[in-house]
Length: 204
Image (cartoon, rainbow, N blue to C red; front, side, top):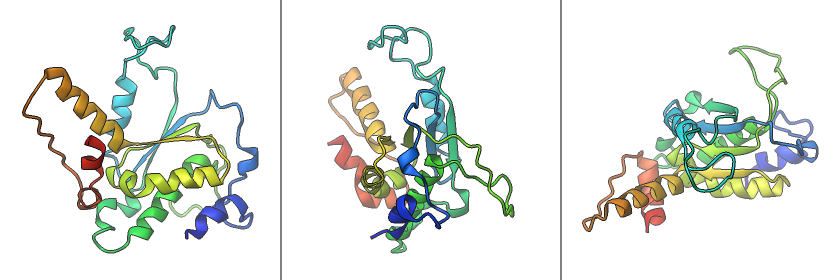
């Protein structure tokens, strides 16, 4: 349905092409990619940077006072040119939204980027990523599944995580920890995220 998915793997003349057959096999030193339609996803990045739930030596579930991702590098993409993503479903442009999400993922997987607006020559010194976090509710709700399918079609073993499941689990864990009987979870989200029912499904 989305031609860009095929172009990324097979369209050698396409600007979206990635040589997936020669994607780095050794990935420990590669960065983790995170994207959102704007800068709001930086709060997700900050939470990741502050996370301390595992022992970095034993790898067991036990905080050790050292951030779990202290040695990791990150690449953050804010697609401000097309923000906000939450409007597209209401406007009947869901396919366009999904294509934007695929392009975001393609950017993180690739090496090319343009340093300044108007540059005609791309730089190619960006590292590809070893995992991707979709730090956008709307992009997760409408794009996570198709991205996971595309990654599989490209033959890449890249983990893609959406924010909805992670956020829902954190909310439920918090309520369970306080033993509240009257459990009400409020969600502040875009029109598109609400329309997707992503959070009610994940919480249930």
